[in-house]
Amino acid sequence: MSKVYFADIRARSEGTSKIKKIKKLFDEAGFGDLIEEEDFTAVKIHFGEHGNDGYLNPVFARQVVDKIKEHKGKPFVADTNTLYSGMRHNSIDHHTVANLHGFNFSVLDAPVIIADGLRSQNFLEVEIGAKHFNKVKIASDFVHADGMIVMSHFKGHEIAGFGGSIKNIAMGCAPAAGKKDQHSVDIESDNDKCIACGTCAEVCPENAIVVEDFAVIDPKKCIGCGECITACPVDAIGMDWESEIRPFMERMTEYAYGAVKNKLDKVGYINFLLDITPECDCAPFSDAPLVRDIGILASKDPIALDKASYDLVNKQEGLRHSHLEKNYKPGEDKFKGSRDHTEGTIQLTYGEELGLGETGYELIEI
Image (cartoon, rainbow, N blue to C red):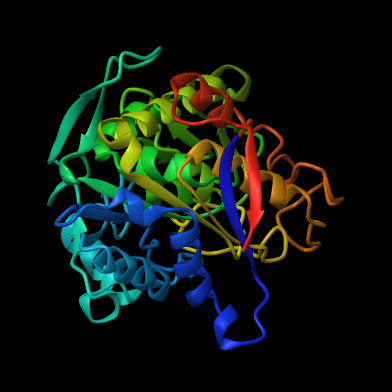
């Protein structure tokens, strides 16, 4: 079984701070062995959408940068542009948001790189020969990196159920065209629920929605990004979950495999089980957490790491006055308690089939 290292959230001295725990997890998980002298090593992290405050603290990323330098690697901190409209749709605005959120050289002591270029045009095709894709589109700077440390805020997601390391490298290492490949779902509006507020039309990057008495989505223009699903205040927009969810999850997982295929033995993963919100950090807001803060986990196996994270979240008592509608008891699935239509574990089982990792793990507390 893969080893997953865990540090809980409690701290009563300088030596047990989160900063010290990140460095210790790096060492215990053997991430130093992944780095050779002069290796270009990406620190993959989400900079957070403008208005969101649930993204990872840039000071956490600095600890990983320092450890990479300690092992004589050359770190850079990176993400890719988004498919949907917003403040991270191109590299200029993306850099602006990253800087506003503290992801800059003075904090990180490393350059910030938007890995897919100015307008998300810089990518390479990686052959994977999988069920949905023979080739996947991966941002060129991630492909050219010698290794990678993936830092993920583990939380809920509107379609994927939950997002951790797998989703971080799947969506986060893909250009806009690759994100479009993964989503590619048929979005529908429920006219009975729709209040014609126009929020969906405002966030649509393709102007595919017209609102009169209710929202009308043009299937020829819609790219399936799902931004309208997250934005709708009355949950009037969705898709045929029964038919769409599995193919979406499998496409996403195939992209995760393609993102690291050329460096499978040179990638380390860290999940932060802090501020476990129901939405991705792509949302321009951060809702109340579903459960209490738990801790930080690290592993060389993203499947085992996400499975351990998922299990630890579900062991918690769910927080009232959150997005949870059920499954409050320890042992119940908190992500399905938030959105019953999701099937987040498909990314784990399908990832194991692809050879990305294994669901069996040994949890080692440090």
